Amino acid sequence: MKLLRFLLFPIAVIYDLITSIRNFLFDKGFFKATSFNVPVIAVGNLSVGGTGKTPQIEYLIRLLKNENKIAVLSRGYKRKSKGFLKLNETHTAEDVGDEPLQYFKKFNNIRVAVDADRTNGITQLLKGENSPEIVLLDDAYQHRKVKASLYILLTKYNDLFTDDFLLPTGNLRESRRGASRASIIIVTKCPTDLSVQEQQKIRGKINLEAHQQLFFSSISYDENISGSENISVNDLNKHEVVLVTGIANPKPLTTYLNTKGINYTHLNFPDHHAFSGKDIVNIQNTFKAISSDKKIILTTEKDYVRLEDKLKDVSYLGIKTNFLLEDNLFDEAIKSHIKC
Image 1 (cartoon, helix red, strand yellow):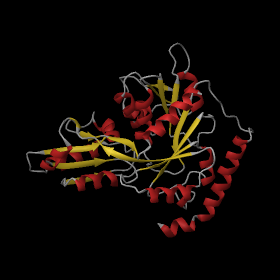
Image 2 (cartoon, helix red, strand yellow):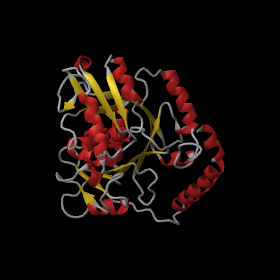
Image 3 (tube, one colour):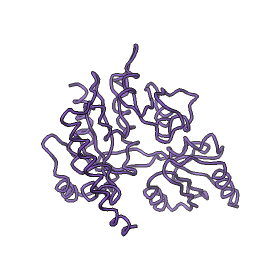
Image 4 (cartoon, one colour):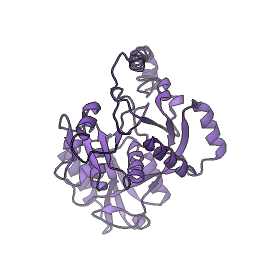
Protein backbone atom coordinates (compact mmCIF):
# COMPACT_ATOMS: atom_id res chain seq x y z
CA MET A 1 0.00 0.00 0.00
CA LYS A 2 2.82 2.43 0.88
CA LEU A 3 4.53 1.70 -2.43
CA LEU A 4 1.28 2.29 -4.34
CA ARG A 5 0.74 5.62 -2.57
CA PHE A 6 4.30 6.64 -3.44
CA LEU A 7 3.75 5.74 -7.10
CA LEU A 8 0.57 7.87 -7.09
CA PHE A 9 2.50 10.96 -5.98
CA PRO A 10 2.17 12.70 -9.40
CA ILE A 11 -1.61 12.48 -9.09
CA ALA A 12 -1.37 14.08 -5.64
CA VAL A 13 0.55 17.00 -7.17
CA ILE A 14 -2.17 17.48 -9.80
CA TYR A 15 -4.84 17.20 -7.09
CA ASP A 16 -3.02 19.85 -5.06
CA LEU A 17 -2.96 22.18 -8.06
CA ILE A 18 -6.69 21.75 -8.74
CA THR A 19 -7.81 22.25 -5.12
CA SER A 20 -5.43 25.19 -4.64
CA ILE A 21 -6.80 26.97 -7.72
CA ARG A 22 -10.34 26.35 -6.51
CA ASN A 23 -9.56 27.78 -3.06
CA PHE A 24 -7.80 30.77 -4.62
CA LEU A 25 -10.84 31.56 -6.76
CA PHE A 26 -13.11 31.43 -3.71
CA ASP A 27 -10.69 33.48 -1.62
CA LYS A 28 -10.50 36.21 -4.27
CA GLY A 29 -14.25 36.27 -4.93
CA PHE A 30 -14.20 34.85 -8.47
CA PHE A 31 -16.39 32.01 -7.20
CA LYS A 32 -19.43 33.04 -5.15
CA ALA A 33 -19.62 32.15 -1.47
CA THR A 34 -22.94 32.92 0.23
CA SER A 35 -23.08 34.41 3.72
CA PHE A 36 -26.13 34.34 5.98
CA ASN A 37 -27.49 36.67 8.66
CA VAL A 38 -27.27 34.02 11.39
CA PRO A 39 -24.12 32.37 12.80
CA VAL A 40 -23.10 29.41 10.67
CA ILE A 41 -20.53 27.16 12.33
CA ALA A 42 -18.78 24.68 10.04
CA VAL A 43 -17.12 21.65 11.63
CA GLY A 44 -14.83 19.53 9.52
CA ASN A 45 -11.34 18.31 8.75
CA LEU A 46 -8.66 18.34 6.09
CA SER A 47 -8.30 14.57 6.04
CA VAL A 48 -10.59 11.70 5.13
CA GLY A 49 -11.64 9.36 7.90
CA GLY A 50 -12.95 9.79 11.40
CA THR A 51 -11.68 12.77 13.36
CA GLY A 52 -14.59 12.95 15.80
CA LYS A 53 -16.96 15.30 13.96
CA THR A 54 -20.13 13.67 15.29
CA PRO A 55 -19.31 13.98 19.02
CA GLN A 56 -18.04 17.51 18.37
CA ILE A 57 -21.33 18.51 16.74
CA GLU A 58 -23.14 16.95 19.69
CA TYR A 59 -20.96 18.96 22.09
CA LEU A 60 -21.99 22.16 20.31
CA ILE A 61 -25.66 21.16 20.41
CA ARG A 62 -25.49 20.59 24.17
CA LEU A 63 -23.66 23.86 24.66
CA LEU A 64 -26.08 26.00 22.66
CA LYS A 65 -29.51 24.38 22.52
CA ASN A 66 -30.94 25.69 25.79
CA GLU A 67 -30.52 29.33 24.85
CA ASN A 68 -30.73 29.23 21.04
CA LYS A 69 -32.78 27.70 18.26
CA ILE A 70 -30.37 25.22 16.68
CA ALA A 71 -30.38 23.56 13.27
CA VAL A 72 -27.90 20.96 12.08
CA LEU A 73 -27.33 20.57 8.35
CA SER A 74 -25.52 17.59 6.85
CA ARG A 75 -25.17 16.24 3.36
CA GLY A 76 -26.52 12.88 4.59
CA TYR A 77 -23.66 10.66 3.46
CA LYS A 78 -24.79 7.52 1.58
CA ARG A 79 -28.49 8.37 1.90
CA LYS A 80 -30.87 7.18 -0.79
CA SER A 81 -32.90 10.39 -0.94
CA LYS A 82 -31.98 13.51 -2.93
CA GLY A 83 -32.19 17.24 -2.35
CA PHE A 84 -33.31 19.04 0.80
CA LEU A 85 -34.99 16.97 3.47
CA LYS A 86 -35.97 18.03 6.97
CA LEU A 87 -35.95 15.05 9.31
CA ASN A 88 -39.06 13.72 10.99
CA GLU A 89 -40.02 10.59 12.94
CA THR A 90 -40.67 8.54 9.80
CA HIS A 91 -37.16 8.80 8.39
CA THR A 92 -34.62 5.99 8.46
CA ALA A 93 -30.86 5.99 8.12
CA GLU A 94 -31.30 4.90 4.50
CA ASP A 95 -33.38 8.03 3.89
CA VAL A 96 -31.16 10.62 5.54
CA GLY A 97 -27.85 9.04 6.64
CA ASP A 98 -26.81 7.72 10.03
CA GLU A 99 -25.31 10.85 11.62
CA PRO A 100 -28.27 13.19 10.92
CA LEU A 101 -30.67 10.56 12.22
CA GLN A 102 -28.55 10.17 15.35
CA TYR A 103 -28.77 13.93 16.04
CA PHE A 104 -32.50 13.96 15.43
CA LYS A 105 -33.24 11.04 17.75
CA LYS A 106 -30.87 12.16 20.48
CA PHE A 107 -31.84 15.81 20.91
CA ASN A 108 -35.23 17.40 21.36
CA ASN A 109 -36.11 20.87 20.10
CA ILE A 110 -33.48 21.08 17.37
CA ARG A 111 -33.96 20.89 13.63
CA VAL A 112 -31.95 18.48 11.52
CA ALA A 113 -31.85 18.57 7.74
CA VAL A 114 -29.84 17.09 4.89
CA ASP A 115 -28.84 18.67 1.61
CA ALA A 116 -25.69 18.22 -0.46
CA ASP A 117 -26.18 21.84 -1.54
CA ARG A 118 -25.48 23.54 1.78
CA THR A 119 -26.45 26.98 0.44
CA ASN A 120 -29.90 25.73 -0.48
CA GLY A 121 -30.14 23.75 2.75
CA ILE A 122 -29.51 26.80 4.94
CA THR A 123 -31.85 28.90 2.80
CA GLN A 124 -34.64 26.35 3.28
CA LEU A 125 -34.03 26.13 7.03
CA LEU A 126 -34.26 29.90 7.42
CA LYS A 127 -37.60 30.18 5.62
CA GLY A 128 -40.77 30.87 7.56
CA GLU A 129 -41.44 31.62 11.20
CA ASN A 130 -39.46 30.28 14.13
CA SER A 131 -36.35 29.82 11.99
CA PRO A 132 -33.07 28.70 13.60
CA GLU A 133 -30.78 31.24 15.23
CA ILE A 134 -27.64 29.14 14.69
CA VAL A 135 -26.82 26.61 11.96
CA LEU A 136 -24.24 23.89 12.55
CA LEU A 137 -22.71 22.48 9.37
CA ASP A 138 -21.54 18.89 9.75
CA ASP A 139 -18.49 17.95 7.64
CA ALA A 140 -18.52 21.10 5.52
CA TYR A 141 -14.98 22.44 5.78
CA GLN A 142 -14.42 22.09 2.02
CA HIS A 143 -17.89 23.33 1.07
CA ARG A 144 -16.74 26.78 -0.04
CA LYS A 145 -20.05 27.86 -1.60
CA VAL A 146 -21.17 28.71 1.94
CA LYS A 147 -19.11 31.30 3.79
CA ALA A 148 -19.41 30.11 7.36
CA SER A 149 -19.07 32.67 10.12
CA LEU A 150 -16.84 30.27 12.08
CA TYR A 151 -14.72 27.31 10.95
CA ILE A 152 -13.71 24.61 13.41
CA LEU A 153 -11.01 22.27 12.10
CA LEU A 154 -10.51 18.85 13.69
CA THR A 155 -7.29 16.85 13.46
CA LYS A 156 -6.52 13.56 15.21
CA TYR A 157 -3.81 13.40 17.85
CA ASN A 158 -2.09 10.41 16.25
CA ASP A 159 -2.64 11.60 12.67
CA LEU A 160 -2.12 15.37 12.56
CA PHE A 161 -2.77 17.12 9.25
CA THR A 162 0.74 18.61 9.53
CA ASP A 163 2.19 15.10 9.16
CA ASP A 164 -0.01 14.13 6.21
CA PHE A 165 -0.05 14.64 2.44
CA LEU A 166 -2.71 15.02 -0.20
CA LEU A 167 -4.75 12.21 -1.70
CA PRO A 168 -3.97 9.69 -3.04
CA THR A 169 -0.46 9.67 -1.57
CA GLY A 170 -1.81 10.73 1.84
CA ASN A 171 -5.25 11.33 3.31
CA LEU A 172 -5.68 15.09 2.94
CA ARG A 173 -8.67 16.42 0.99
CA GLU A 174 -6.84 19.69 0.39
CA SER A 175 -3.47 21.25 1.15
CA ARG A 176 -2.41 21.94 4.73
CA ARG A 177 -2.73 25.61 3.76
CA GLY A 178 -6.49 25.14 4.08
CA ALA A 179 -6.09 25.14 7.85
CA SER A 180 -5.76 28.92 7.68
CA ARG A 181 -9.57 29.23 7.23
CA ALA A 182 -10.15 27.88 10.71
CA SER A 183 -10.52 30.16 13.70
CA ILE A 184 -10.50 27.15 16.03
CA ILE A 185 -8.38 24.01 15.63
CA ILE A 186 -9.06 21.02 17.86
CA VAL A 187 -6.65 18.13 18.27
CA THR A 188 -9.08 15.26 18.90
CA LYS A 189 -8.87 11.80 20.43
CA CYS A 190 -5.99 12.78 22.69
CA PRO A 191 -4.93 10.65 25.65
CA THR A 192 -6.60 12.01 28.76
CA ASP A 193 -3.19 12.37 30.40
CA LEU A 194 -1.61 14.31 27.53
CA SER A 195 1.21 16.33 29.07
CA VAL A 196 1.64 20.09 28.76
CA GLN A 197 5.00 19.42 27.08
CA GLU A 198 3.37 17.26 24.41
CA GLN A 199 0.68 19.88 23.88
CA GLN A 200 3.36 22.50 23.33
CA LYS A 201 5.11 20.22 20.84
CA ILE A 202 1.90 19.85 18.85
CA ARG A 203 1.27 23.58 19.07
CA GLY A 204 4.69 24.14 17.50
CA LYS A 205 3.89 21.72 14.67
CA ILE A 206 0.59 23.39 13.85
CA ASN A 207 2.11 26.89 14.04
CA LEU A 208 -1.07 28.84 14.70
CA GLU A 209 -1.85 32.06 12.89
CA ALA A 210 -2.77 35.20 14.84
CA HIS A 211 -6.52 34.65 14.49
CA GLN A 212 -6.49 31.02 15.61
CA GLN A 213 -7.05 29.19 18.91
CA LEU A 214 -5.93 25.63 19.62
CA PHE A 215 -7.73 23.15 21.89
CA PHE A 216 -7.16 19.51 22.83
CA SER A 217 -9.97 17.03 23.34
CA SER A 218 -10.45 13.36 24.18
CA ILE A 219 -13.40 11.02 23.92
CA SER A 220 -15.10 9.33 26.84
CA TYR A 221 -17.57 6.48 26.76
CA ASP A 222 -20.93 6.45 28.49
CA GLU A 223 -21.14 4.61 31.80
CA ASN A 224 -24.15 2.61 30.65
CA ILE A 225 -25.12 0.56 27.62
CA SER A 226 -28.37 1.63 25.93
CA GLY A 227 -30.75 -0.06 23.50
CA SER A 228 -32.23 -3.52 23.99
CA GLU A 229 -30.06 -3.92 27.11
CA ASN A 230 -29.61 -1.20 29.72
CA ILE A 231 -26.68 -2.23 31.85
CA SER A 232 -23.54 -0.69 33.26
CA VAL A 233 -20.37 -0.91 31.19
CA ASN A 234 -18.77 -2.50 34.25
CA ASP A 235 -21.26 -5.36 33.96
CA LEU A 236 -20.27 -6.07 30.37
CA ASN A 237 -17.44 -8.33 31.50
CA LYS A 238 -20.11 -10.73 32.77
CA HIS A 239 -21.36 -11.13 29.18
CA GLU A 240 -20.09 -12.61 25.95
CA VAL A 241 -20.16 -9.71 23.50
CA VAL A 242 -20.60 -9.64 19.72
CA LEU A 243 -19.14 -6.25 18.76
CA VAL A 244 -20.46 -4.86 15.47
CA THR A 245 -18.80 -1.75 14.03
CA GLY A 246 -19.16 0.15 10.77
CA ILE A 247 -17.08 3.22 11.57
CA ALA A 248 -13.85 4.65 10.18
CA ASN A 249 -11.67 3.64 13.13
CA PRO A 250 -12.98 1.17 15.73
CA LYS A 251 -9.59 0.86 17.46
CA PRO A 252 -10.33 3.35 20.30
CA LEU A 253 -13.47 1.36 21.13
CA THR A 254 -11.73 -2.02 21.05
CA THR A 255 -8.88 -0.63 23.14
CA TYR A 256 -11.41 0.63 25.68
CA LEU A 257 -13.16 -2.74 25.85
CA ASN A 258 -9.81 -4.47 26.27
CA THR A 259 -8.93 -2.24 29.22
CA LYS A 260 -12.26 -3.21 30.78
CA GLY A 261 -11.44 -6.90 30.40
CA ILE A 262 -14.44 -7.52 28.16
CA ASN A 263 -14.48 -10.66 26.02
CA TYR A 264 -15.85 -9.95 22.54
CA THR A 265 -16.06 -11.23 18.99
CA HIS A 266 -15.55 -8.33 16.59
CA LEU A 267 -17.48 -8.12 13.31
CA ASN A 268 -15.88 -5.13 11.59
CA PHE A 269 -17.56 -3.48 8.58
CA PRO A 270 -16.55 -0.42 6.48
CA ASP A 271 -17.44 3.11 7.55
CA HIS A 272 -21.15 4.02 7.09
CA HIS A 273 -21.81 0.43 6.03
CA ALA A 274 -25.31 -0.31 4.74
CA PHE A 275 -26.06 -3.58 6.53
CA SER A 276 -27.53 -6.12 4.11
CA GLY A 277 -29.79 -9.04 4.90
CA LYS A 278 -26.76 -11.31 4.61
CA ASP A 279 -24.88 -9.16 7.13
CA ILE A 280 -27.77 -9.37 9.57
CA VAL A 281 -27.93 -13.16 9.26
CA ASN A 282 -24.18 -13.32 9.87
CA ILE A 283 -24.50 -11.19 13.01
CA GLN A 284 -27.44 -13.26 14.27
CA ASN A 285 -25.65 -16.57 13.62
CA THR A 286 -22.55 -15.33 15.42
CA PHE A 287 -24.73 -14.33 18.36
CA LYS A 288 -26.62 -17.65 18.41
CA ALA A 289 -23.37 -19.63 18.31
CA ILE A 290 -22.41 -18.27 21.74
CA SER A 291 -23.52 -20.80 24.34
CA SER A 292 -23.49 -18.42 27.30
CA ASP A 293 -26.82 -17.32 28.77
CA LYS A 294 -25.38 -13.84 29.22
CA LYS A 295 -24.59 -12.42 25.81
CA ILE A 296 -25.13 -9.15 24.02
CA ILE A 297 -24.79 -7.57 20.57
CA LEU A 298 -22.97 -4.29 21.09
CA THR A 299 -22.42 -1.53 18.55
CA THR A 300 -21.66 2.17 18.32
CA GLU A 301 -24.37 4.79 18.52
CA LYS A 302 -23.83 5.70 14.87
CA ASP A 303 -24.22 2.06 13.81
CA TYR A 304 -27.20 1.60 16.10
CA VAL A 305 -29.38 3.95 14.05
CA ARG A 306 -28.70 1.71 11.03
CA LEU A 307 -29.25 -1.54 12.91
CA GLU A 308 -32.11 -0.97 15.35
CA ASP A 309 -34.81 -1.65 12.75
CA LYS A 310 -33.02 -4.79 11.54
CA LEU A 311 -31.86 -6.37 14.80
CA LYS A 312 -34.08 -6.57 17.86
CA ASP A 313 -31.29 -7.58 20.25
CA VAL A 314 -28.79 -4.78 19.73
CA SER A 315 -27.38 -2.24 22.18
CA TYR A 316 -24.91 0.61 21.85
CA LEU A 317 -22.23 2.46 23.77
CA GLY A 318 -22.31 6.22 23.31
CA ILE A 319 -19.33 8.60 23.36
CA LYS A 320 -18.77 12.24 24.21
CA THR A 321 -16.10 14.86 23.54
CA ASN A 322 -14.24 16.25 26.54
CA PHE A 323 -11.77 19.11 26.43
CA LEU A 324 -8.49 18.81 28.29
CA LEU A 325 -8.51 21.60 30.89
CA GLU A 326 -9.89 24.10 28.38
CA ASP A 327 -13.61 23.39 28.15
CA ASN A 328 -14.59 26.77 29.62
CA LEU A 329 -12.27 28.59 27.20
CA PHE A 330 -13.76 26.72 24.25
CA ASP A 331 -17.31 27.38 25.43
CA GLU A 332 -16.52 31.06 25.84
CA ALA A 333 -15.01 31.24 22.35
CA ILE A 334 -18.18 29.76 20.81
CA LYS A 335 -20.57 31.92 22.83
CA SER A 336 -18.57 35.06 22.10
CA HIS A 337 -18.77 34.30 18.39
CA ILE A 338 -22.54 33.88 18.29
CA LYS A 339 -23.02 37.17 20.16
CA CYS A 340 -21.00 39.13 17.61
